Length: 318
Ligand code: TXA
Ligand code: MG
Image (cartoon, rainbow, N blue to C red; front, top):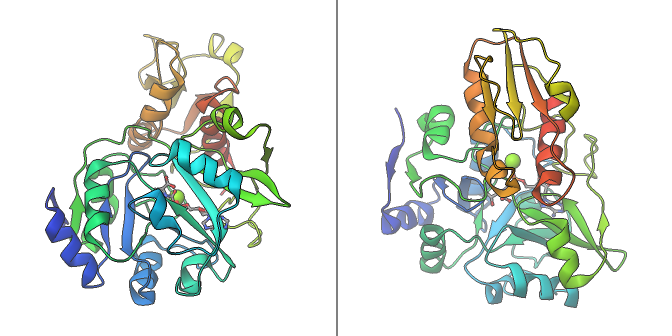
């Protein structure tokens, strides 16, 4: 049976209080949410997603002040980042209070916390007296959902409710920031650019992992992957491609009218628009009968860096 899709916040709150797992909108991607303090609800999230338990979850809270309720301390530079960019596509990794179940953090002493910006989910969080643990609402390893229908298509029969907040405005996951050896450290590139962060706190380390080492949770090399194999190509290769009906093409700006299965992420070269469209276009290409998807590498600046990260993980062998 498909999930009910609607905009009923009290209904969503009631389901969550009853320990159910539902889909919620955020500005980045849709989340698969449950009561973070209820280990059974958290276990259900892992089960619905078919996610390995070594991959920890992000908890979602209604405000910057609410972060302090669930963590032991917030280092000054991360506090500064929260002040500038929350609510928004920023996640902070902080020492957890004991009340956060180990299942949420996969046994790690730190918990990832963020304040999402979507108005429906902010209203929902304000009604609740617990944070929401929420990974992206896709089967583990697949492309993240940026529309309610993406969630319905893949997980609808396992969920009672999808809170419909329309298409996601940012379109890629939050940027995850930790404090490693007393330095601000980007652990996952995402919807908040490294440049924007450095404007506030100065130069940062970038330490995104690419192995399936449980010490580097969640940053598995193969991730965000369509079923059709995907290969990254450089911009200058795009002009010399031989058109094929069996090959899909995802470009940054170029629109090649001779190609049957082609999308340009942003014809005007706007990296934010490109991020917003990325996962929806990958899903569309993945539903065509194709042997291969070719994806053009974006410029390594602003959100281009996070998009390239997603594309290279999608290209990694599964
Ligand atoms: O934008 C987002 O962050 C979305 C929306 C729904 O909020 N959520 C999301 O969650 O992308 P998920 O589960 O797909 O990715 C969570 C990742 C983990 O895979 C891991 O890399 C990192 O967050 N993470 C979580 N807890 C951590 C911790 N304690 N230490 C280090 N990394 C952690
Ligand atoms: Mg995910």
